[in-house]
Length: 274
Image (cartoon, rainbow, N blue to C red; front, side, top):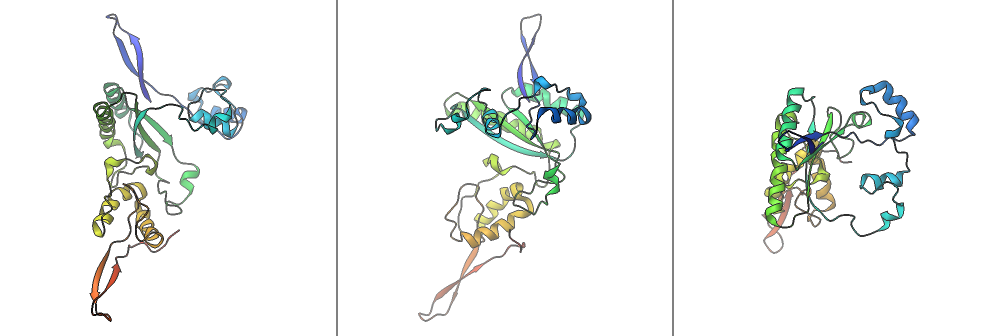
């Protein structure tokens, strides 16, 4: 959903309005798709002319916003298609948003203008897979994921601050309608607003990581910490939102030279790893 120019009033002012676009990919031909939609979602009114049949490689071009008909060789180019600044945030919705809530959200989006929202529907196969089967926990119980997106082409920190703040406001406005305790988030959007790990040693790093880690991975977080501690105990591979290692303390004990140290790792409650 995004904001576009709408009708012009008698004073010559162009009123902003919200536009909702339904874009999807179906693994099959258009004839089969239409037969399914005619039964399950006739309100959408999809016609044959709304469908574009293409190969998998061509669909990659489509989702990257290349013009229809672009040769797949374009995927070999190492030059970015566009150079733009952007910010992303995410949410998960577990209960339908009432009509009054949607109207209020639309009004807020018109006020903000720049940020857009994308709803990615869940359910189906996503819900059939256990939340603990893989690190990705957002399975049954989620209706859809929200992506908040803002792009801009203006250089400078002032412009960046402005557009990032608009995105934060839209994210804040959505608080009553999304998951809670924790407010779940999608790891691939890397939202530094929900926490940063400064990768210090000991308990501080673990607690910082747990703050955003629970939002991204929920009950799988401690299992990931166990794996990280076994594979990379020195935390060599790290970034602002990487999985931390288990905290440890050095306890002195008597050795041949009179003072050696034993490293004691704290353990997480989870015992199984993938």
